[in-house]
Length: 246
Image (cartoon, rainbow, N blue to C red; front, top):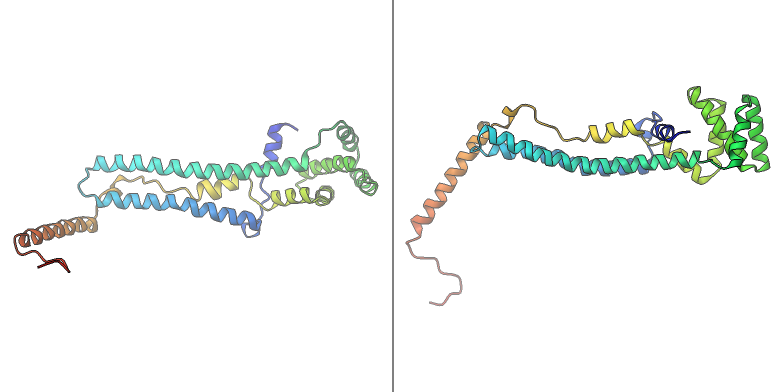
């Protein structure tokens, strides 16, 4: 099996409903979703900030949004890609745990198992399991796995592979990981696509509306009142500090 074949099979999705995902995976996904939601909020706040600055020209608004939005996306993809890569590497490690047979003994057993029909393969597996022939069991399980894939991933062949994988705690965990977590395409959909912050396509949406214009005017009026109040009272008697000497 080539590296591309190994990687491709490890990235395949089981089609499991998200509600049945592994609890540990769900917790990790919720954590990264919470982290990535910050970038959504940053984009929303960026729009508000630009609209609130009524003194900017249309070109300046667009340039500011473009520059700041690029920085938001850079941060998003940096964290999303790192998390996704870590998850997919875990799937690849689990797959290799289930399909790592490369000794000469394994190869010889594999060659003989390939020539067996289904009934012979099942009988040989039972015999090897009773006799404790671990390498032979592994070789038969790999042949059964390959036949199962060619037939849609179910049936007696898969039962042989699943029985072999479940007989060891490490292999059992690896099999569960592959079955109860999303593959590559669905991971990208659930993380990179679903959590990506929006990108504004209509620059007119950066123009200040009536509310922003009125808020800016009120700010100017408030600043004018504060200046007027200060200078109107600045020449009068100063209020003494409490406890000051007379």
